[in-house]
Amino acid sequence: MNNKSLFRFISALLVALVASLGFAATASAGNPHYIQGTPTVSIGDNSLTVSFKAAGLGNTAESADFSLTGEVTATAQCFTKSGNPVNGVPKMETTEVALTDTFPVRNGRVNGSFTVAPLTTLECTGKQYVQILDVSYDLWLTGEDIAAVHLVG
Image (cartoon, rainbow, N blue to C red; front, side, top):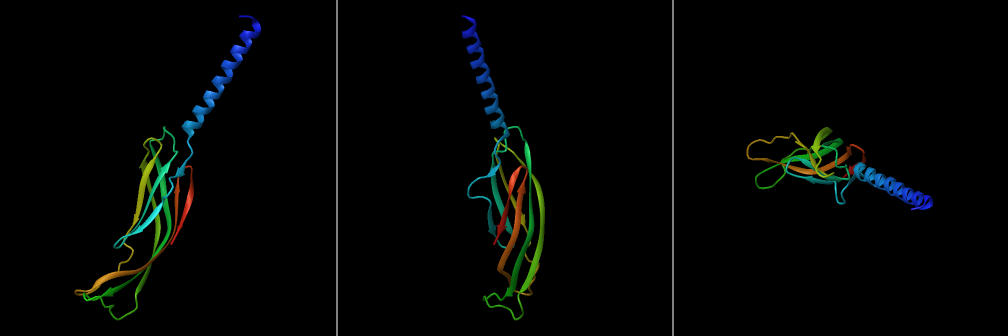
């Protein structure tokens, strides 16, 4: 091998090495994002749950912190066992939300949820029951190195 060929071989080897290091750094750093279709909001009997799936968190992180903040407003009223509303004005309550939790990261992914409960503290007498008439929310879901998501409904 002459000097020119040796120089070309070493140059090509260095270019390949630098390129592979660049790809490795990109792969381990990840691209944090929420998986399409998440987060979701569901309303149960007397609770609101925000569920999410995040990916691209890298393969070195063991856990990730996420937070849910904002407000949830619920309107509820007492009803008789036959389904008729009890006389009186429905009760409206606003709950300030400030939840934070640490979720395990597996293969660069996190599955998590936050539950806000109770939405109403209304209590009925006798055989009456509480029915939630309306729920509205203005929430922010945030996580480490991932864009915040505004949830309004």
